[in-house]
Amino acid sequence: MIDSAIPRGRRRSPLSRVLRSALTMAAAAVLGAGITVSLSSPAGAADCSAGYVGLTFDDGPNPSNTTTLLNTLRQNGIRATLFNIGQNAQNNPSLVQAERDAGMWIGNHSWTHPHLTQMSSSQILSELQRTQQVIQQLTGTAPRLFRPPYGETNGTLKSVEQQLGLTEVIWDVDSQDWNGASTSQIVQAAGRLQNGQVILMHDQYATTIAAIPQIMSNLRSRNLCPGMISTSTGRAVAPTGGGGTTPPPSSPPPSSPPPGGGGCTATLSAGQQWSDRYNLNVSVSGSSNWTVTMNVPSPEKIIATWNTSATWPSSQVMVAKPNGNGNTFGVTIQTNGTWTWPSVSCSAS
Image 1: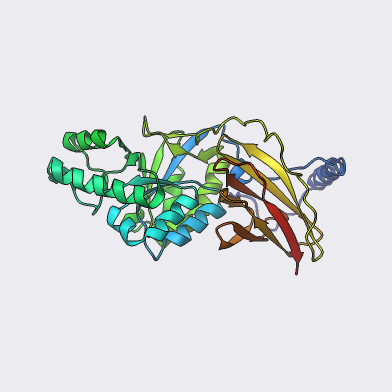
Image 2 (image 1 turned 135 degrees about the vertical axis):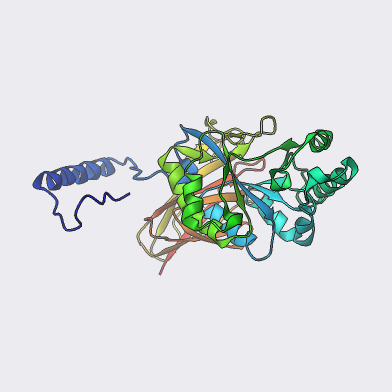
């Protein structure tokens, strides 16, 4: 935030110039010693010391917005929980699979989004069970989380949830995106999130998608990270295996692959690791106008990126370009049981 009390035209004091010069020389000395200096924490390697929050998006998938939502989440290093309406999932199977491939957690939001508290037990069971079945068919996994439409719940609904092994997830913060909230109002609402809390957002609003980068920036500034929602408590927690790091793979590939052609070099280095995924940092030298192609060995998947503009020619290939955040970017890779690093090549234009 810019302090409005400081006039725009005020010149830096001599002391300010001295301090800035000293800091610049110190940074140069550190870089000269071969030490990497991080001026800002990337999304995938953020400081999570203040805890985790649950970013949730209801009512998808839909052909108009879901792909943009997934791309925006990935570009900002976010894994979120998506509560899908069953009939939407049935009508858009490829989008459900794209949600899964992007590393999102997929929850049950009923079949038709009715007022479940006005329905019989058998009607509720049908709404929830049909959604369970279609999501399991499309992703291979039945949801463990359920969000009741409108946040309405009662004893009958809770009994059906228990029968199906579902954990009910309400919310602590309502973004009000469904009620016409602007992007800035959605960002402001997310700014109230505290450790363990969950925010309600929706799949279908452009204002919500536009708010995501600012929401993530605010979370980073408060040392909060997007987390998963616990199936035992319904609260946001560290993703499975998150928090601590695990030892590196026993035989990792070289961290500096041979350079690609075209006048630039892309170098990989290890970031944080968890039981099911790991971060890689990519440093580009030789050009500031570069294109890095990353080939990820199957069945591994890139589930998040930061500090780059990424496109996906195929599910195993990512093409990264500068997005104004310098020549270092990163990815989070879901291992799916293997720990083979991707190959990278770089070309300058």
